[in-house]
Image (cartoon, chains in turn orange, red):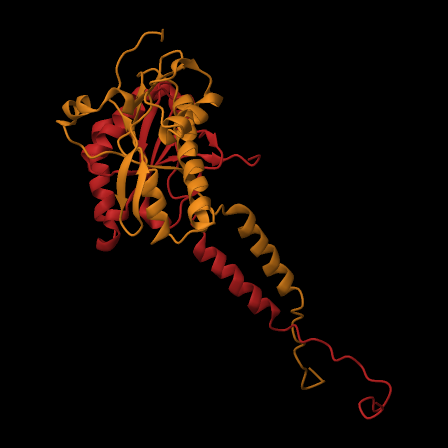
Length: 200
Length: 157
């Protein structure tokens, strides 16, 4: 009353930074960026007549991978015909896709014109047929897909290093990667599920 | 030399920190905008498999739609049992509903993004292939051909 003017003291704001820091850290911790990752695949187009077409493929060009209801992996191609362990699958697949020794039981190697590169000799017509039972475990199926995928990318990597001097990942994704993909193109076909017993 | 060192004693001026809160608020708001709180409640238990070198990160989340397959979470078991269910958006659905789901998802996208649509299949490890195959067949019929088997990348590899 008596003193007349009195100044309102300024609020001490030095702790605002700390408060907002705490908020920031809270948000950083609670929100998950939810980075989704996975194995990309492309499904074949829906086409009811395609079952007949598959019959025309030569036997040596086909590798069948069956995963039965007991989750055993049975591989059949010109060379291998037995139940295998998942760890063997990649190398069997690589040998099948690449046919390095030009084995006449493995897929035919023929001239194939890659756009933007030229003619290469490769197993264009090979097919890996992946068959599962309705009761096959998804985890096993996924691992099989993953191993087959790995077989392709290791072959691509090797060829890419030989041809371009760099690994596949470092190539230009518009021009060079399609060439390498043309050399080893992904030919995994998934048949409709059937009922299989245990593999022989 | 002494030209630059004029008076011996000179105090370091104190840094002005009055704008620090604003700065941090800006960062805070950025994070609040960018991070989306998970918009769907996942009603199934999904533990996706782990893979190695072939696992790729999904970029551009706006292109991705999710399909969850797995056994219902505990609180839904009484009503739905323990057999694996397909979850689209918020609801459990039959495989036949996928086509409509795909159409709806496709409608919500920009025209130029439509061919790039990806379906992320979040499937529990323990699920049997039957239901997965049904879903895949429906996706083929719906012409949603780009799929991703959702999986975590194993840190060891």
